[in-house]
Length: 453
Ligand SMILES: Cc1ncc(COP(=O)(O)O)c(C=O)c1O
Image (cartoon, rainbow, N blue to C red; front, side, top):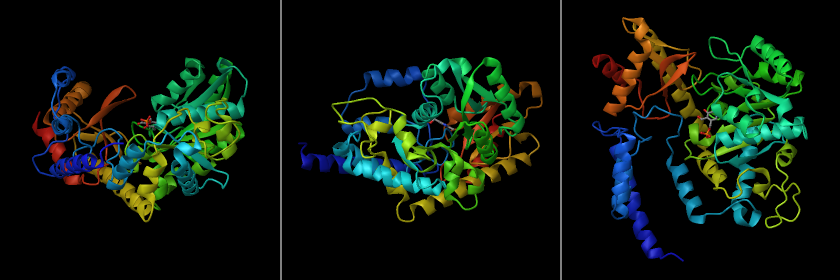
C-alpha cells in the first residue's frame, strides 16, 4: 500500500506544477517548442539527476507543448481537463481489462461508449466496438476481421486490400504484418483533390486481377492524413457491396465530423461500413492512446481472434465482458472511461462545436492565404488540415524555399508546423487542433515567414 499522506502531498504539488505550466502557455513570450537536436537532448538526459520536481520541470521545459496556441503540427489532441483526469484515474486503478474481473467498470463502460458511438455513426443496433491502443492497431484488427469474414483459411498471398494512395502508412504495414507482402496492397489512384475516384476503383480491381489476387476489403479515408480529404464514402460503400468487399473506414482523424450537424455530411455513407477506426486522441480531446474500433456486426468482432487462453477464460465463447477476446492487447488501459468522461453530459455537443470551429478556422486560413499572390494552398480544406506553401521568385526552388521556412519556424519555436510531400513536392502542413489558435496568430506566423527571407 502506498502512503496516502505522501501521495496526497506529492500529487497536489504536481497538480500545481502542471497548472503553472499550462498557465504559462498563454503568455505572449511563450514558445511551444524549444528545439534541441537529438544529440543535445540525449546529452542532457544521460546526465540528468535530481528530485521528482526537478525531473518534471526538465521534462516540461524540454518537451513540445500541445497546449500552446502555436501547436498546429501533428494530429495529437490537446487533452481536456476531463480527459486528463480520467487518465489519472486509469493509472491509479491500473485495471488490466482483458478479463471481466480485471475491468468490471472498464469493460461495461467500453460497451456503453462503443454502442453510443455506433449510434452516432448511424450503425445498426447490432454494432459494438472495442478500444485499442492506437489507430494503427485498430486498422490492423479491422484487416484481420476482414480476412476472417471474407476469406477464412485462404493463404494471405492470394488476397489483397484496396486502399487510397493517400492512406496512412499503417494500412500498408498491417497488410505486411499479416504476411501478404507488398503485392497484398493495391493503391487506388486519387483525383486532384486527393479523393478516391470511380475510375481509380475500377482500375484497382484490374490490378488485383493482373496480380492474381482476390480483393477482400476496401478502405475509405475519413479523412486522409496529409490533406484532410474525405473520400466519397457513399461511392465506396456501393462499390464494396457490388464486389463483396469488407468496407473499412479509417476515420481515425475525421470521424468526429459526425458530432457536428454542419460537418456530418462529409461522412455520409460511413453508416454502411463493416468497421470504423476512430482515434479519440486526435480530435476528441482525450489523451493518447485511445482508439475505438467499431464493428457493424458484433459477431464479427469475436471471429477476429479465437485463441484459447485457459489462464484467462474457460470457454472462448462470445463474451463482451472479456475485452481481451477481441483485441490484440491483453492488458490495456481504461480507454472507454476517458471517452465517457469527455462525452457525457453535453460533452458530445461541445466536441461538435469544437470540431466546427477548427474546420472553419482551416477554411478561413486557406482563404486568406489563397488571396495572397505568393502563397498557395494544395486543396480547399475539408477538415482542419491545411497544406500550403510560399511561391518564391524562382519557382524551381519551391521545395527548398519552404523547407527553410519550416526550419526557421522550428528554431523560433512559437509555432510548430509540419510538412508533407504531395505527389513529390514539399508542402507546409498544419492541423488546427487547439481551441486557442486564432487566424490572427496564424497570419502572424505567415508574416514571420515572409520577414525572414
Ligand atoms: C488516418 C489515420 N489513420 C491511422 C493513423 C494512425 O493512428 P495512431 O497514431 O493512433 O496509431 C493516423 C495517424 O495520424 C491517421 O492519420
